[in-house]
Image 1 (tube, rainbow over the protein chains, first blue to last red):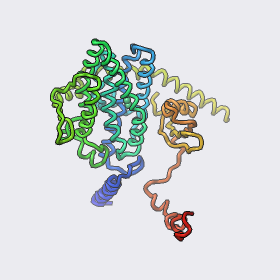
Image 2: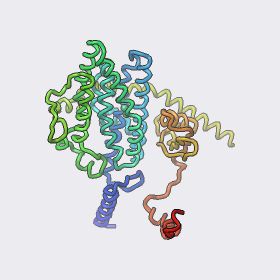
Image 3: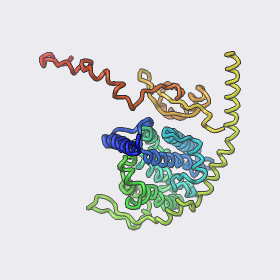
Image 4: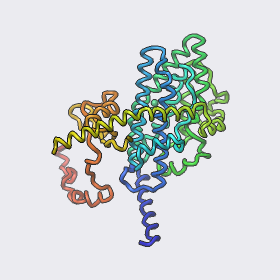
Length: 322
Length: 95
Ligand SMILES: [Fe+2]
Ligand SMILES: [Fe+2]
């Protein structure tokens, strides 16, 4: 076949692929897909998986110090869910033809990213409340939208994850209610956590649409179904009455209802901070990866034991068969 | 040892008696027993199921999406398999 024929072939395949997406059909692992679509998905889904896994660290930090046994049980269940979310998403990524070991290596050597929000430290119990309420809340906005993403395994993973997420947000908000309606010191703790986590939560939606490198094509391929700014707006709007109910001060001094738009106008995000944290200079970037590497290495004996057991069993099976 | 030495399993969960097992996802495990235990931990934390099947992914034989047209073609030219092929007189009502 001549190169010209090949190019024509690819064009035809690409047209068929886009037609399927335009018709709201899902793309499944064995379907033909453009290389860039595959790469884009591997980047996005694995980044999402890494976020679930690294996200266990800031909250795990408080499991032993939760203020009551009930709180400890709830937090433990939540963190366990996040491990499960990581698994669903790694499995979805693997359907694109990349191995788990490659994905983990990319996380550990820094070539793959995870949500920068997890590079902020959890300094107080209030932070555990703020994370569940705001960080999981922002994640839910994004994930609800991704239930309609064009790649089948990703969409199905999202549906499963969304079913589990609302408990995460509610348990966090309940912590905030108790603090905000408690003693003045507790209320101050809630306010402080809100102040520190509000803006980073808004950054979770990524850069403005006008600045986003991947946005346009991701929308055309329906990997993303709503833009960063639209999702962020949704989150800003829904959070206002929640802050009001807590009786806390809104961290955004420029927040104003815009009658014409039917949305809140808000102040500008500190994008320099965003870039800094993304580029590895947040409070906890190094610590998060170091901890992941350490846990991975310390778990080697489990994998070795599993391997030894497996070999033994195989040998036993072979000898009884003989 | 890396995960790649572990077998890949597909997990199917029956959510209630009387319903079909439905594909829930996949996971790595050393053997069937371990896959069942992992599947319980991963896919049934909120009583999503009353029964789990695990199947080695490589044991699944799947039809090819690409030639699905010809593969499924033989049944498409038999419209009389569908009830709607047979119009009913209005007077008869439902059947
Ligand atoms: Fe999650
Ligand atoms: Fe969550």
